[in-house]
Length: 327
Image (cartoon, rainbow, N blue to C red):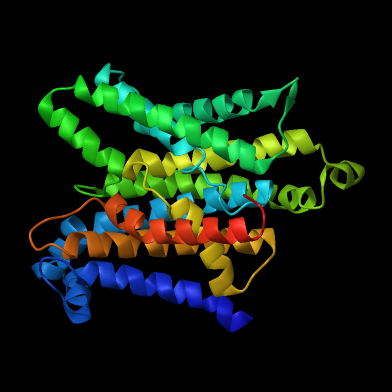
């Protein structure tokens, strides 16, 4: 068991090293080490400007997206439940695009958080029937998919009203991009992510109790509604933190939890969240490596690669759910 848990930190360190080495110019670990300590040469330029900021931004964004997806998958007990599938990330992306289109001078994390929370409220309201929220996780997911399509359509409409250069940048960002990332972006997502993950750590006990069911949770002194709303808010804010720096990167939030759980062989909610965060970071970093290396001279958006990786996984998951009678 212990050896399985150590696999993910090793994979994460390996992915970071690979990301720093591979690009238009391939560097050796010795060149990176020399650049780190001497501050000169191609290794220093790569670490400080070319690949270092993008690598650590990818790690931070992937970690928060992975943790966010796992929160919803545990709460709804459905592997399809994730902030990208349920429209929360599309809502965050729409808020950022609207801010650019209308000249709203607010920090991107605030715009992203506002959009994500608004989308979450919209999904909840649209899932209400006769004064109660529908209990079917599949229904909530389907409503979220509808909200996602609506937010994406609104974003596309706003992009058509922008000047050509701004429209091109916004379109690339909406796919999910790590191009031209700086240490400011890395510090932003890692700082916000660390704060939100600390808040999430304080909610792990509530998440464990909620797995037992609302009646038993209430019997143990927990207020299920309040605890669930707090976890949903934390999950949406985690997703928004990732969207603010990398755009709505698809499928990372959905894939990270199940993959991390299988790699680390863990089942407890706290361990699953840690595994998902590390797996999300690994997936995003590796996707960025492929995106900037697969076509010489061209850096593809990282979202293109995660989409290519995630689409077969989604099809397999849908077929598995159908066989189990869940669809």
